[in-house]
Amino acid sequence: MKQSLMFLALLGAIVLAGCGGNGDTTSQTTYNNGSGNQPFKPTTHLSHRSLVTNYYAGQLQVMDATQDRLTNFTFATGAQSTYMQPSPDGTLTFVNNSGGNSISSFNNNQEAVKASIFLSGFTESFVTSVNNKVGFAAVYNYNNGTFRTPGAIVRFNPTDGSLNTQIMFPKARYLAMDPLEKHLLVFNDSDNIAYWVDLNTIDSTLQVPPYYPITIAAHLSRPVAAFFSADSTKAYILNCGIECGGTDVPSVIEISVPASPASPVTGTAVTSTVVKSWPVNGARRGLMDLKANKLYVVGSTSTVSDSAGNAVQDGYFTTIDLAAGTASAPIRIGNGAKYVIRNVNGAFWVGSTHCGVQSCFTIVNAAAGTATVLPTSKGDGTGVSFTANSGEVYTIEGGEFYMYDQSGNPITSQYATDVRGQASDVLYIN
Image (cartoon, rainbow, N blue to C red):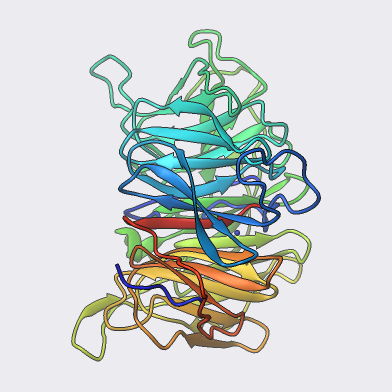
């Protein structure tokens, strides 16, 4: 392992591979990092900590964010732990274990894995409620025990891991929950349709919440994410388009949320009005800022050749001002499949995979319309987190841990920071 240079986090869903990736694909806002004066921490006793997922070891490792050093503290999760997702209140950290078809629920205050949520299939997208009472995961290959098309929306308890009756949904891939926590928007790989799940009613035949295909006067093309307005009356759908195997250019579509039919029968069509549509140069990842009422979108439109002749995807960043109804000019950013986007004090760090000879991290100044690709290629950018106590940025690149200042200059530590194994993600939790 190379010695790392010490140089970069709602309600949301994060995705992995294919048209997914670790990022805020359906993240509603910059989420709560659990900052503040918190009790407990009975194991590490650290004032400031970052968690790092170790893919090969299937565990969380703890970084002392005050001294910038890797500690000996570890917490077992599940096979092939990848990305982390905080609960909306910042008290829990969820770890997606891609090799174990499970999610681990880590209590940040008690410093313990309190639940293992076994999904009977892999997930690329899950959401949890503000009170941590319920969660939903899109499980693409869920075995429903029949010869029907597999797939389900798995309902689970985030704190104890128990499961509820699942909503059978063919090839469910991505989902988002509205701020009122009464509905889900769901997308699959079988069609270009958005589905509306009403969590307040029960299909009397199936005995689970019904889902309805939404009739929209606009063509969806490989939808991969959705975001909601603060009042839950509007939804914003990211169409990945050509990049994800669709036939259309990428776009973002604003729709009015549909009204559920009088009779809660799964499969009944509902109608939604298209309020606005923006063609963009890529819509694979998004990050929504409800306070600023802006949606930040990154993605690709085509394949290009880098300086070494490698075929890689291009990259663009677009700001959509939802109040004004306008989209900025696209900002050209680094190459590669966009994987994660984070807001670090107004600068956006975008991580990508399969970037060729270029660094996989770009720092975007959205206001100025400029982007800076970090100078050194270190491999796939799969994790980025802002450490609030020091103002440093932690990244995971090529399975290794790195640190930067907020301008992207590398930082060197006097302590060991080498993660033995393959690091996947990093998250500052207090």
